[in-house]
Image (cartoon, rainbow, N blue to C red; front, side, top):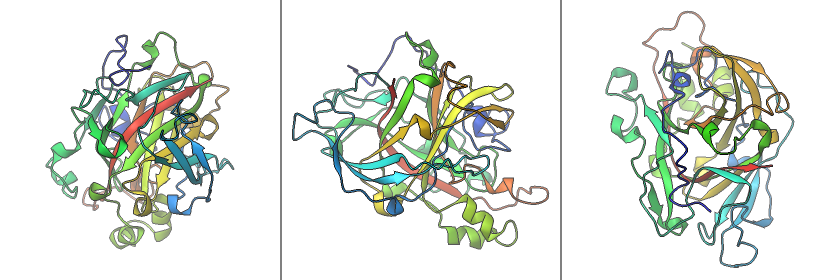
Length: 367
């Protein structure tokens, strides 16, 4: 059972993985928009409003009491999304990432057996805690590069405390407005957060031990700003790219990237697993949702100096996961600069995705 946001004394706190957010130690990937060195898998950007419908109501996987207490948390499956591989767009042919709406959020919850929480709160009588095991970064400044973000730079900082959510039985949640550049790859992930040093756990978690990932989240509509595809076409076509490039990059939806990494360094082969999943903010904002990602949906690879080599869970089965990182993303997982012909010019207009998201838990379910 966890208390006070799963604080493990064996873990030290470091900020890692900023290399994947920009050039050098703080820059942006030139070939990949991956935020951290790690195994990574990409989820297809199928909008939640267009996912395959489902009518079944299933007990919440995170609540051991769900099948006993009729008032406890339950989930209603809304549909599934499929995967794409971010480097080449090849479909895996699976449609097994589930999105469900959570009912009675936070009621009767307990930590599942054989699980590890990157973030979670199961003690609702303790609130506004310090998220001690989470670290993050914020590249947003008052310079011209970030002139088109909607808020002052400090609004994108890692929050100093969690917040009890009245819509989720006052469970402590972790909330952050995540920023993603659409045009330029330098510092393309304006901010983000991570859980590092997971390899210092008493029992190491390897890629082969992960059965699935559960993410409980809520997209907060008021502060979420996603440019439409039409607005991007108006801004970048025909002077920079074609309309086809815009449509391949973006659907005008929320995209979140979770990257699991081995080393989190740039100039060294690093085993990773990645997923990018899409949520239609127009129909799914301000609802508590559960995204269930089976290990088979992850994209496994090795990355060295932003160059990816496809891999498999079998090849990485014994590799220890050091940490996990969360950022906002585009549908395809990179920026327009990857497709702009000729030399990049800094006068190219910049556009941002801003995703205000609250997390109730991010949990690894283990074999």
